[in-house]
Length: 113
Image (tube, rainbow, N blue to C red; front, side, top):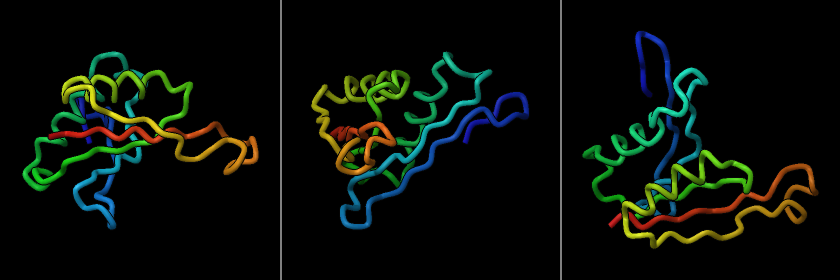
């Protein structure tokens, strides 16, 4: 969670995958509209990954829809910082999983070490 001037500016939620404890799954990155475009999401993500309890984390995963430019930008930047070895695969398909009621979710897996 990030605070600015006593206001909640943003937060990240995530968890280590129970079947793969070396993988941190980022569920959500949220930044308040008044703090967007200032690098806060990347700062929060970078600080999160520096925590001692995450030092054994080898991979980060998240899901992103095709139209979410802000998330693609954030995670591509992180991927570039770790050698541009990330892999993108279809996770939940618009037709097969959502019956065309939600966009396809792509899984972005980034090696951190």
